[in-house]
Length: 513
Image (tube, rainbow, N blue to C red):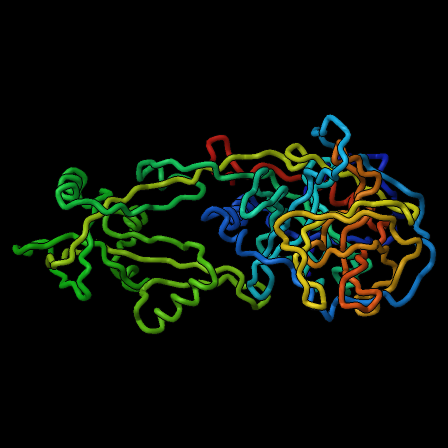
């Protein structure tokens, strides 16, 4: 896997840094998700577009019932890995009074991504305190697919609920995990920290002139408004062929004529193939997409739409171009492109008239993740047998087929972690900590919080849900487990918290380069 160097700050949280011997091989790795603002914008827009349609379509990272394991071996009391350490949480919201119910952390939410099969997936996660207030903690398998490569279009949505992103969408920039998970798919290191760009939302739109539309660096589209013939004629007389007024003859085979044809004719936008467009359009750049020639796209579409258009194209009924962006040989993003020329045709009986409206999608910077929702602390090398709250969005059914959870709202478990660590051979696990809990798949990646303050809604992340277990053999999940947070975890965290990210949205709502 290709590695990279990323911009790091000059200093860190000195109380939390664990110094490693200079000659020691690093036990952490880092991979790019979308470090460039344009790619981050595209990823976040993918999930926000069409009123969060992709967010609503996503399903939980799925655990088959055969992967609900039984813990088979008790290990030593505690991995011997140095002194304990903590980094304090940060946040501003408090309830103002003691309450009996458990207040859900503002920091938790869902991470969304596309797997190598092209499926839209999500896991649980939390914002965690870091130097640049831009870090997410989740399970490693919610960032890396079988330890081979990072997932596509990875974003974090804190406070997610039914397609809504109340604090914005935070696109992943860089992912950090353990060398063993990345190289061997070893779940003793099944955690990851992801540095995210500033969040953004799409609060509205604005109609602009064609010139402003062409210059806009951000989301934009053309709305075709059907109008009456007299409005079309007035607009066409005023603006000519370069204007936004056009007509379309919906005859199946309109007869093309020259501009000097004396009979009834209309200037019609005709969709053509990429080759016909290339043959007809002048080579002068100023004329391409100009008065007589227009290219629309590539525009992102769903996998289902891509398959539908592919069938039409095979039948000769779709002249446009289809593209599938591939990653490791699997399709993960799909696009359509249309090509048009303006052509005089004999007026038929099915002529309709249109005006183009040029629309900009105005994005809003929602700030750094830690400023928006706060960040949980982190703790490592802590004694076992301490009480923790585990939070997440469970959604899978139990092995017996019962389905008590929907994945719509977050749930929690509370109890003391086991006093021993455990082994799971099928996932190369030797030292997982455990908690009695019946949450199912979908909750993976959710935080285990030590010393949780119910009024401040803050604590210390001391694990993230990794695996689900049926220990008593009744076909229901009764234990969940997490990597034991040790000095290696602290090392990965300290590398991740140096990663610098920034806003991807300018002051006018435009995309930054």
